[in-house]
Amino acid sequence: MKSQEICPRFEAAISLLGQRWTGLIIHQLMDEPKRFGQLTEEIGISGRLLSERLKNLEGDGLVERTVHPETPVRIEYSLTEKGASLQPVMKEIERWSQNWIEPAETAESTS
Amino acid sequence: MKSQEICPRFEAAISLLGQRWTGLIIHQLMDEPKRFGQLTEEIGISGRLLSERLKNLEGDGLVERTVHPETPVRIEYSLTEKGASLQPVMKEIERWSQNWIEPAETAESTS
DNA sequence: ATAATCAGTTACAAATAGTAAGTAGATGGA
DNA sequence: TCCATCTACTTACTATTTGTAACTGATTAT
Image (cartoon, rainbow over all chains, first blue to last red):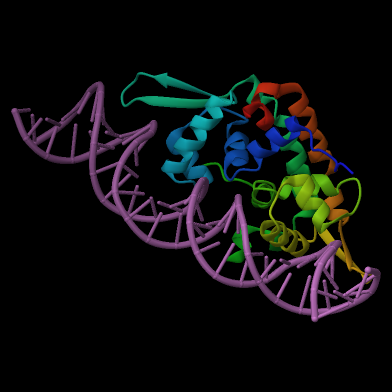
């Protein structure tokens, strides 16, 4: 008997969000464009990985990179329409976490 | 100036879902309890990782393990209330993937 | 005895992530 | 002119996580 197949689109979406940092990056870009340094500080990700993730997200059409040729150079990352359309997903994760994550399950409570 | 902090509960939720396989496992358990072998087949995960993930999910209170002492032994994994409450999140991911993932972005289109 | 079934576990190789130092391009000061 | 500064990355290296495939243990049918 054939086993229940998983919808390939859902799988693709999960393989985006189910990768470390990706969800947080999208979440941090939800409200406003941000700069590279800003993202590393807020998220606590290394430059190496942030750079890699942003390239992937750009490649997937979720994030847009804008160069402002000021001095020193300013580069802003923002969500495309496709990226911004993840807002309901983010909102549901937020809602769930408010209802079901106890303070004790939190990273900072580990310290 | 202090940078925008990320809500620790949201971070905890994302560190659950933002781990490989976890989202898929929860998704596959959404409709009905399933057995170990069934999950490996449907998801395409190895026994080593499935075992590890299920232990974590049990530890986080999302999944419940039930032993049926038949022969051969049958063990069922099901979602707890906490796990099942992720349904709206899953539904939103599904919705998003239907609207925004093109067939070309799909894993099977790579073959 | 032997084999079969299920639910894992083990040992090891391959891929990915984390860390810290370094590079590049533009400008401004000594 | 030379050095320092500011961002936005890269590079080299180590540590952790993942993937693969073979193996174990308990139970029962042949």
